[in-house]
Length: 593
Image 1 (cartoon, one colour):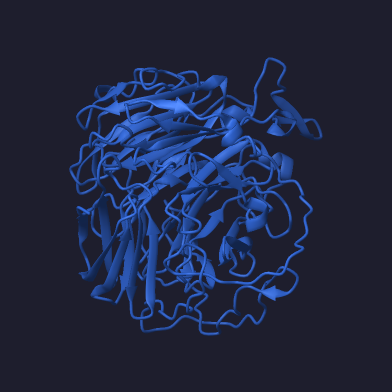
Image 2 (spheres, rainbow, N blue to C red):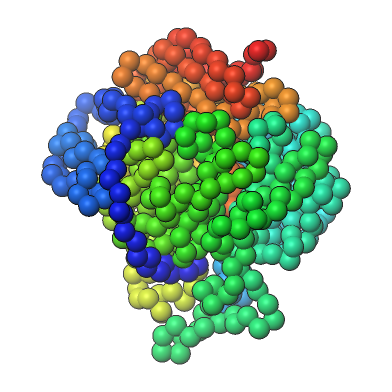
């Protein structure tokens, strides 16, 4: 990946902040007053009187409360159970020195392939992926050979999941180096290659593919496709560079020409049509690594964050009819708070401070730290990573896949990040403090104010360094505690089961929309109970090269129910449920108009 470069820019306008709980990042809302659920013995606290100023002195976020715990609760429990649960897969070591393509990484996916209520697993591999069927209670069986997902051998990289043909089965898209494959789900456990028949290019335009995702972008109900691409590799591309004192390693992409994302319109006839770049991605930077969808302004049209490697990010505001406005610079997400572009290996949207507005976390190159773009206004964001300690915690790591996850069901979103360097000899080049294999991070969210890494208090298995790349989250055993899946580019898959025991309640929503968007991609769901609130969107494509459980999971803390739940379906229909009981997986079908 590419070391970030400095981008100089200046804010020349006054900023008025108006933000809203049910309308994306817009109208102002009351601050969150809910408390973290803690054991009776409270943890030590300290006061930080400084608040990060934004836009020439305008304070966008309040000071840190002296009552906020800065030590994570000791009852958090996680264990790597991949082997014992039958998820046995190891990515092999690669030749040295690694090239940029070899170190680029691969993704993973969690989805219910056979509609039995249990999340299955797909692991991208070279030359073929692996598919594991969840037999119930989080026990897996390798169904790779019989699945039909191994008929095309290639240098596969990423994965996206969606029911593209509206037949009720979730299908699989694979991205790769000069390769693209769409596998139709035939009956739940068997897949058929339909790439060319669906109008997609099996050679991916000879592009270096990266992340991809499905979403209805034109409001017709059919799920369109966004495929990201990285840089041009040609016969004259230099593979190895000298970094220090004759030490050779894989070259970064800075000297290479960028490739750009492509958007494919779903025609509704089991096929796709490439939308001209002039009206979609021509205005973007290229060198794409990650994408994440959200509705920035609650207009019912899903917008797209495109994270790029070492150049400013793109934020495409959907104006309808496949026309987009790149508002990344105006919104404050194109670069970090120091004016430098991010390497942007991972990204995910989530309301970490519970103010009813979705925020964006983006991982980064080591020695630069991740960014946390906190929504503070109408499509306006401030990088608050320094203020909440995320910058300090991530500065010495090279971060990849990142996912918001509520560890203990207290209602506050925590962070799961996998890490790993791209240079096999990083210690020789950068020093002993920059290892090739790195420890993952489980960052506990202390009431939206601070993050605390809980990994040092966990088992040796969790602390085992890895070469992290893609990641995903899902409740694999349906016990109401969200689990984690991580790719080790040169090692066994990590299946981190959540064994945290508390009295906290939870609620999971499995939404089913009307034809053709049967899995309700793009739906927004908002909950309220007293002064507490939750906001989520159905959008499984995020992290890095990966796709997560599309079901919405809320931790409720001590609440036995949620007073009101409002669903804005992708069709635009709004449905409200009252007093929804906790501790259940609730299947909700979109009602007739």
